[in-house]
Image (cartoon, rainbow, N blue to C red; front, side, top):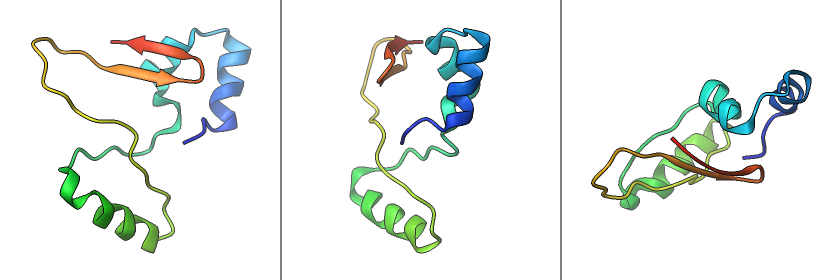
Length: 79
């Protein structure tokens, strides 16, 4: 989803690095669900039936280490 204008304003006025913006403010993502691929479309349809936009924003992969990678228009950030 596009970043809401409020978060862009906070970043511009505070000169906060985008990596910190995603870490502290989550940049407007309201809720994230981690579900299996076979029910994704059903979850999205239910959400949209309540006039709430929903979409796939990422995936979970097996890893030897704990890591979160965010790819956005402002860069790629790893936590």
